[in-house]
Image 1 (tube, rainbow, N blue to C red):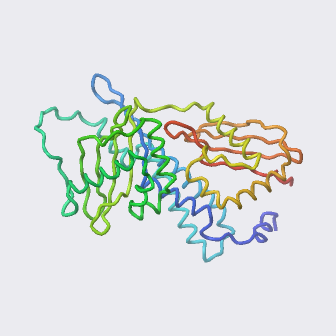
Image 2 (tube, helix red, strand yellow; image 1 turned 90 degrees about the horizontal axis):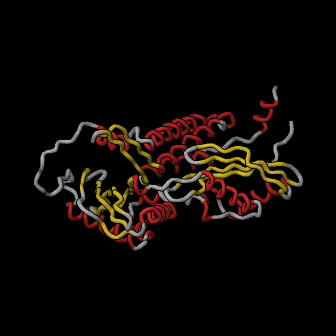
Image 3 (spheres, rainbow, N blue to C red; image 1 turned 180 degrees about the horizontal axis):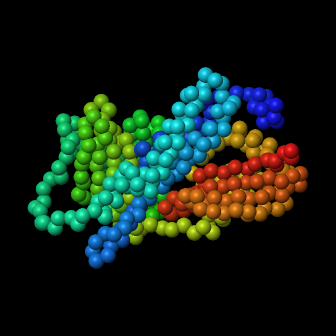
Length: 365
């Protein structure tokens, strides 16, 4: 019997679903309800020749779901026989959704693909048409007036930063997939890019079915310019409730993150962690919930730091692009060594940490 066989026999069975599958499932759900995208089109002689689309919520959620699926594979050998089939199915679903969201985040499927086709497709017909009311396939559900009123209500609350009311009044499925903190972060990020929201612009367009998604698209007038929005509604007791939010920031308003600033925020977080602190203002809004109860997280962190001892030196050993910046540090402590890793993502106007890990010393074999 090999050492590995002995370890597998001695190790307790891994429960299903584990924290890995739960985190992956939540990450796979969020991109269905929240979108924060940007796009740009290059023209030659008036003809669109290239199109770049990014939806960073889809990219981040897809990456986390796919990584959780791969991590869950390691738990199969320690899964009870009766649970192996469900775990295997969960891995396939997480991996599939992860890949789908990654493709959607880069505009290869979904809304980005449609936008790409519209941007670089055949030249539009230049025939001048008289103004008319926007057409809609919504029937016999709510009228366009009902949807316009619902949209105006959401954007009025958005303008006054009443995000909790937006969240509380949203469809239950929206609230089950997207956190209040994430919704607030989307609002705040847009404010950093566009300034204050002034009003709902015009014109609005409508599409959808009364028993499915109802879409309202139009411009949101910010201080620095218009940002196109798509609000998705679902009917509940014949009333349209917010089901999804999508904002597309135009290229002139987009900000580009400096990789050196990503290093600074990772190092600032590391210095805080070495003092048993967590900088909540520097992390993804959903990260604290993923870390678990604060007391439990603090105990785990303290246990690791006790094993390493007082850290005397910190060295950045690796930095590479990973839908943001991934960084690794070596920690030299009074008792032993350890490592710290960070995944830092660009949120349109600032860097934030979407994941991190401080590892205890590796046991010598």
